[in-house]
Image 1 (cartoon, rainbow, N blue to C red):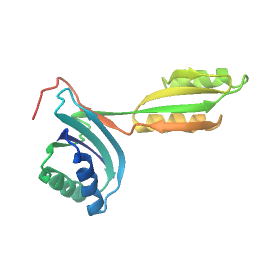
Image 2: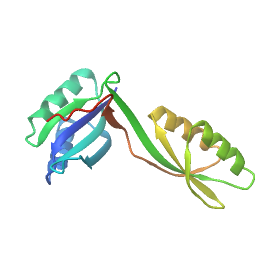
Image 3: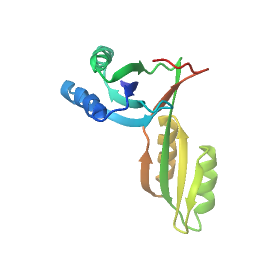
Image 4: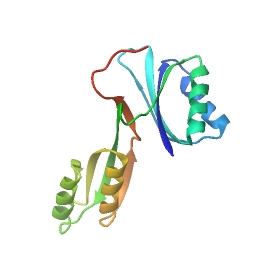
Length: 163
């Protein structure tokens, strides 16, 4: 199963390398990885996904909590958190397919962020299944490029600063 984890870490050099090294040493692959500063410049948020079972997830969380620069490990819980992904997708268009492609993009609430005579770039935001569905439908027309962020996660409701 794919497990999504958010790590609140000290914003210092080498922290990401230690986190990635921990996964590598344990034989786990990181499927997606996002790192960004928080509103506090001394901290960063790492969001990553990995394929593991429940005991593997528990072991990884215990090991991550032992790293000095890791402040908090937050496993994804769909009742408490929301998860979204964003993708930029360049699709081949022709005069005859442009209208059809634009109509189909509305079904997925994809936004056109660039258009040229031979292609359109769409921004699609949502869960991975939605993005996969959009890609599957656009493959008929010719997908030229795909860039995906991987999942990002945030707790639902009012945010409390926790440290």
